[in-house]
Length: 446
Image (cartoon, rainbow, N blue to C red):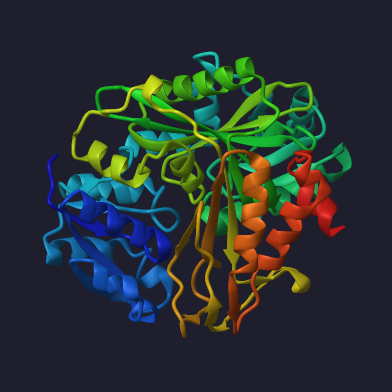
């Protein structure tokens, strides 16, 4: 279980975070990179770096043989997957286990269970965690409408093995069911190689609330409060904050308790996030559990003062959690804005080009997580995330104003970004007044 060298099977700002965490834990690090990323400055901060293939992710960051070869070549004993790419691929985890490589995350059996959305629903429901009405789509086409009627409209058609909104369609009424299923099946098959779908009751314009947890190998599990993630575009989060507003203390405790119960129900280990929707009547329902660190984990770090990446690594090497629940305190408020290389005025078309940095935000209560550097070429091969701007303050309004100023100081040229949209979001009256749900951005953009 003990290890001394960690290979980072990822790129960008999360790779940098893992390198820093390894340094603080006196561990050697190995950064892998594609040919397109050979100029990334963070590679020089790792103990060593290895090229694992061309720009195409399928031949580099998504290539299990390339990554296993890099482990063997470097002598690394552990792999940190970051998020995206192979972070939630149970086959990758199982291969790591077969090669006696410590995977910094849950084991492959837990990952398989959570990757099957229907099985995950059943597992958490068995311990009393609330779930929405839902069921698998029957193979007999004549029985599909009966199943939909039992679930009730509006409903979602969802991919059993999907994520990030892939293979997911809202069906307001029966007339759209058949087309939604056909479209979702094709998308699910293309995204994850499996076209299985299920039906789930839809909550109209819910709030999206998630709870960050850590669990060690002895079953000790703690939470780090909740995050509000309702500002989304096509189920992709743009703005996150912690703590969530307008939750009474009983609701907050119930959410945290449900998240811990869900983690225990599946035998979870390492860092994970339990996601819920909250309806207008104040009821919450489990939707899924992410078996990895998430992009927005940083807001939880800022309000608790805990480095979750370091905790992940410590758990994976067998250390018991040295954090007790009553020692984890939520201090102040934090907001994160994701800055993507996309052009909102052109339907969020990805933007590529060479970056010129005029100014980057800094100062009291501001954190910037990014792999950006002056002259960096933004290429079309990878996720469009360029930077995460995180602001902390004593209360939400202080943070909101502080964030607006930080975004104003994020001045780069050469590509289009979502910076101006982020400013528009946090200055909108509905955001200021905390009247937000998952259709907030749709209403804002008209």
